[in-house]
Length: 182
Image (cartoon, rainbow, N blue to C red; front, side):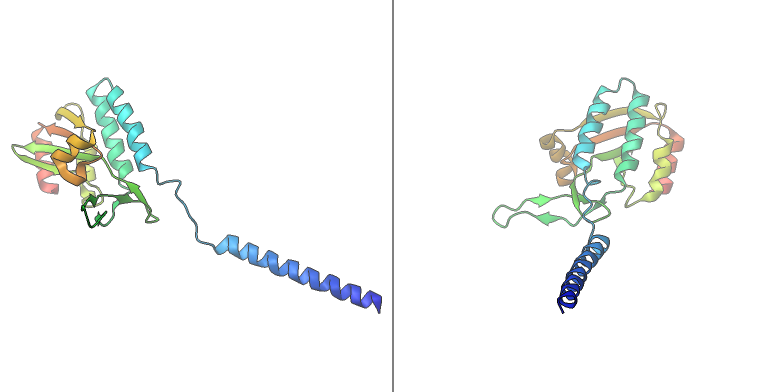
């Protein structure tokens, strides 16, 4: 009698342990993944700004610009939000593939004609990647940038709060390509 009661107790405990292990395994397997490790846009911006400001040649800066434009294309524009009702502040954020807001992107602007410029956003216009690939130190006459939030925000509003880089294009073929793609 005692052996039967003991084996029933052991069996009951084993069933409970098996049940708990099953729940843990399924919980770990099918739980929602909280992946924020690739949501570091602000850190990426700061590292990039430091490299950009330390770059000694125009061609080195252009290569950094091209790489940053392509790297930022993984972040899409999230819906504009108003922070508070009492003093409305529009927040311009970008989100990663998981929908996590990661901060704002640096604006990259090409001036290709008198008073004509385009903001390069590969999410909205992926065909501009052809133009980005063609940028080099010969067809970009001038590069100027501003990363201070107050000044950049004054020039481009909420969209420019993380800074901007502007490039003046002189090459006729590249101007024509921009016109055709845009």
